Length: 608
Image 1: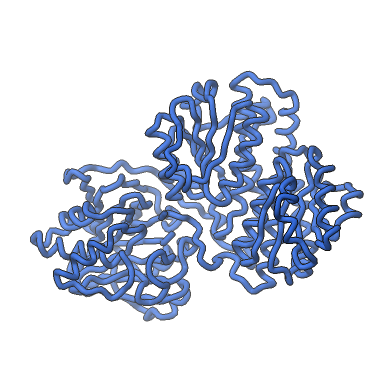
Image 2 (image 1 turned 60 degrees about the vertical axis):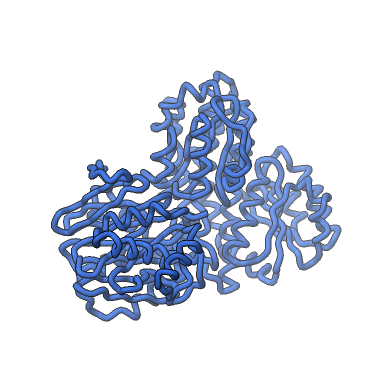
């Protein structure tokens, strides 16, 4: 959700902090702020995006220590008062915070009784003033005050804190929210995301929950653990991505990332045509468990949940293992029956999704084998699960996920075939499917070449306030994902349904102002989808049909159609979603929406 960044070192902090904020803007864009410490605290905050903040900054702000924040509002309206950094009652402390404080009301009452007042509506300000209270009670020992205050907090947090008069120090601590420390030639950084760090940063540290970090320009990094003992964190080498972070000539990140799928889907392929093998480099530790697992449970949220539904189909068909996909947010609260012999696969683009993390931890405590498929190396989920598979899709900046979805589906498909092979289940057709998957970039290129046709379709249907998406079998999750993309970025109400469920309710909605997108690209369910299309048209509904190239019958039936290059059914979810992503993009553009930063949404949901 919110993005935090801090710097202390030998260089002026302002530009480095702004650079970090811009790299984290996809995490939150309701408001932004910077605090520079140079004897006094110099604070600048603005509602809106980082450009709004930057326009308010003086041309020169001297100071080599500072913290900054880009906010996605969870508590308190998105305005200047609620923007971070917050300043304590005395004005001697300033803090940025990512997370949720669940017991803030009782803490706030306690502090009010002690004479504290509050300027904002946020629980972040409550935590800051609790730290200041402990600081004043404990002989101005900042480390002790922070540890005592955070020990009383229920919830999650990652914070960066400055104290007036300590112009060469940043205090940082985390619990449940991501926090990363980095060392560079020019100084020390803290951030909620690896993307914030400059390309010169090559040494990073991943603090554990409750580790208190003190970044000092002169003395380096000190770490105090939950027990109060000073420890030494082990660094890891990291080189920030130098590509895929700009728009590269595209109008929006989302459109750029749609087009990148021509490259990212092949990067998700671990199948080697030379030896006809699938080789996942980081799952050898659980290979023996995969041979004997009794059940697969896939957990995820939003787009990842839809990818998981496709995984269900593939695991049951090819690996012959009972499989289910669960919303992580529901799974963790319903006391699931889970244990040894179960494989829990967590799907998360960021590897930091709060609900998915909590559900995965629950599964691991219960004795299940855990595997994460995600896009961010050294994310919390990759560090905490038994094994991991990386998407290798590069940074995804647009809030609405595109290339991560197709890469997840490509990985899940290969994983189903891989487990099938481990369990000696023979499917002669797998070799051909894999070869087709390995060559999908050619087909993706052809779909991307239909950009103008899809744009014209979006303009034609831009009048619609509601949409229905239908599919069957392996394409039903694609219908769900197509509907999600449309409502995420264009704010048009859209529903995804299995075609077979049309007669059980949704058909009542159909009229001339309620268009349907029918995904009819799989051979297995083609005839049944034809019946669905007839049913909709008989009630005056318009149908846009996704068809296999050369399917003249379906083309002649449709009000409008988009052709997809013909390949095996298992690859169709990857190909079919791309024109739906593009259709949603242009629908949003015709409505004047911000496609990269849709209202009320954040890229990485790191709070519950």
